[in-house]
Length: 147
Image 1 (cartoon, rainbow, N blue to C red):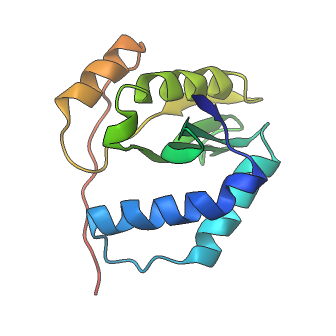
Image 2: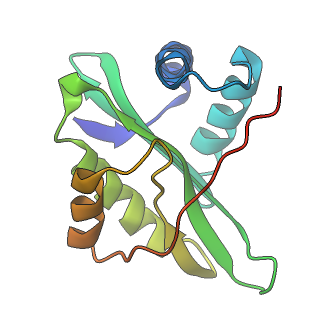
Image 3: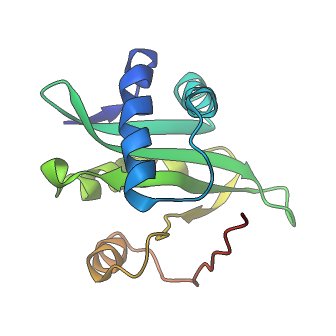
């Protein structure tokens, strides 16, 4: 089941996201406190920020966190995903989670642009899903990790 995240989910989400962080071995250190803060913001102000989870029998098996902010060159906003991850156990639920994000994002006051990212490397399956959602591919990201 895909549902909006709630305060009571935060401890499980911190654990889930710690595992995601380890899976992708980023250099930045994982901080439980930082993650709790971001999740707290996402679940408390659903007009401007939001989070959805893939809940399978009470276990978190996926998450999408969306945030809005003003564009630097405009009075309008963009909505972006901070993280979008679905475990193998919840495979197939990502489309439904992304659609909920997309519908919510379109209702954010002043929104002009909605972005879903691909930051773990090229993923043809993900590209096809975003295409089915009516999104267009608009660039790439490059990473430099600093020691």
